[in-house]
Image 1 (cartoon, rainbow, N blue to C red):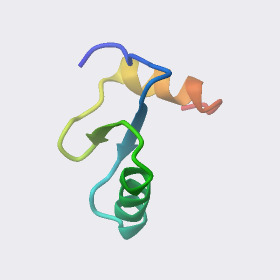
Image 2 (image 1 turned 60 degrees about the vertical axis):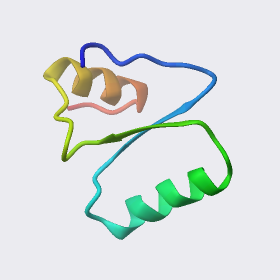
Image 3 (image 1 turned 90 degrees about the vertical axis):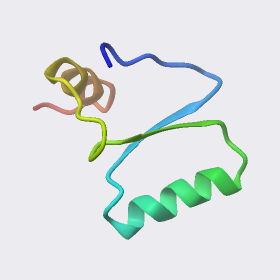
Image 4 (image 1 turned 120 degrees about the vertical axis):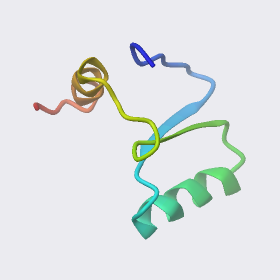
Length: 62
């Protein structure tokens, strides 16, 4: 994984598969029939660049 790609045709969901809230969110999105790109951060480690990019998209600072 390099830079974070975006699309208006799908939802990219970054989540940790441990918390029940994340599992509920994923189940809700799937039940709505939305096209989802699932990225479990416990299985797919994000690079520093990806973390910075994601934080910027969320208007957060690291």
